[in-house]
Image (cartoon, rainbow, N blue to C red; front, side):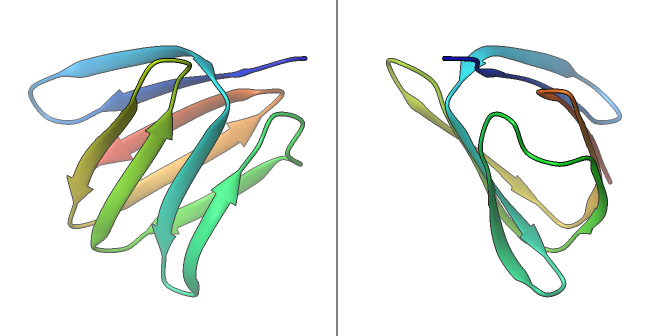
Length: 80
């Protein structure tokens, strides 16, 4: 089964997560969950918590906003 690759970039750091099985994002319309094979999407992020599920751990990042691009199991998140 395919997995997601998630890159999170802010003003000071850049982190990449491999083998991500699900990603939960805060958007103006509410939280969305992204799974492998998700359609292409460009969305604004709202204040909230990003949850990244890898095989051994659930990673969290708090955000006050940003932008997320999803394409072909690759996710790029630019945080404010």
